Image (cartoon, rainbow, N blue to C red; front, side):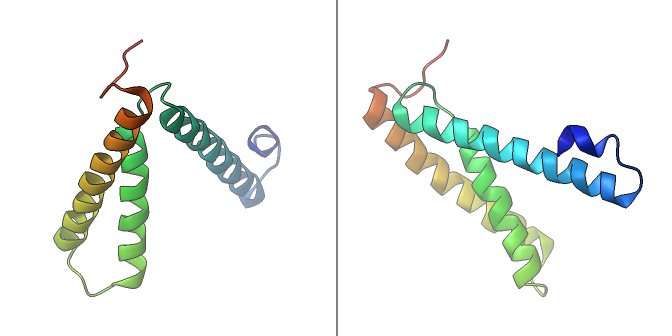
Length: 101
């Protein structure tokens, strides 16, 4: 989709490029999930940020009356909670808090 989108003219090509970029991002996220939970490499902040962005998007669409600062605060709390849980999961699996390579 990503490569073909560069050859298609108009809004359809832009949609194909966006879809291809989203699919590539999902593939990278899936790889980081597998590496993290296998204890190979810690991707704590990347995975917590993905959850935080999803929470922020849900708050944007489902709570239109909520202030932007409150949305950011809730997304930050989600980031902190998920990062803590992911760090504990990685520590259980690998025996280390972080693995640098």
